[in-house]
Length: 442
Image 1 (cartoon, one colour):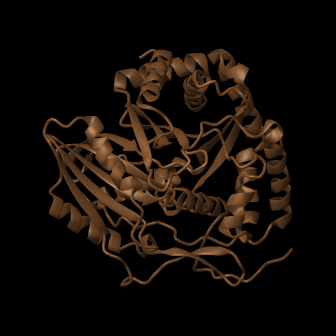
Image 2 (image 1 turned 90 degrees about the vertical axis):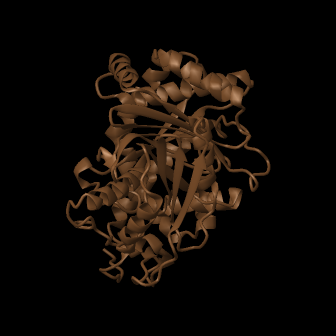
């Protein structure tokens, strides 16, 4: 058993962290901006801009990890180099005021500018935006996915709120130390063999079915279409999912819905060659550990292959997804991906980004999918304003440059289509939403 020397006080990056770094590298190469996302709080009213800026600045000063950057140790394991307290760029914070008659589309078009803007320096990983729109306020945090996953970003904002309310020290219990995982090599190589078999099966008819990406992306950002459902609609969707897919099987049900509506667009465009390969990210933390594991990425993946004839029928599609889900849970594929990915950290990001696309002939997936589940932002207010809803606006790895994401907040299900500008027309997006609502019965 080989044990290489390491520092006990460092936050070494896991294999999954390094894969996220590869996504960031790919996006910067393709679009000029990294693998970023944005969490948006829709508020009844808006906090005072000066107080919000000051409180956020004081809060974030407690977390030098926010201004870190990747480095390699002498043992070749990558780690997150955390600066001292005084070494930090100023907080990026901008304000927009829309007309009183501005609608939701105007608000999210304005917010899209923030998540499509590259960070200003290598040590900047957060930016905040405050949008005034009539009686509503929208507070958005753009974040680097190398620093947070979706649920971690929600928990970070929840910590800010709890500190605002005087509910103790927000940083209590947070771990910023991670071992280098330079051990248990036999288990890692065994997991690597299992993962390789899974990708070989996915790649039998490679490349997968994809929508063409616009040829020039450096002047293009991502477009987002938010699909909110109210509490009554959400309850009906959950009931339908339990009836059609089975109890607690909301994720495979919503994945089936996403495949079905996108299949309609592929069919309308006469894109009929190849199977659908879908990468589905899942949160691997128990709910009670989210507050201890706020920073970095705590996720893994399911990998689904859907043949075109299966996507023609929703019952057949749902049956295929459930069958594959049970098989991957039984074989522990997500755990194997976590374990095997640690072996990939030796590869520099340009090489890793190439290796990740080998099996699927230059592609990663037909599209990305995630169902985050219930939000980790559990506070009913943000500062003194009631939280009406929470949305996510994630940029997607390019390729495939297309993703469908769902999560719940305060009893409401929200979806978002994220796609590179020019990939889908407005008519196609509206068609997908109509098909989705019809399929869901809402």
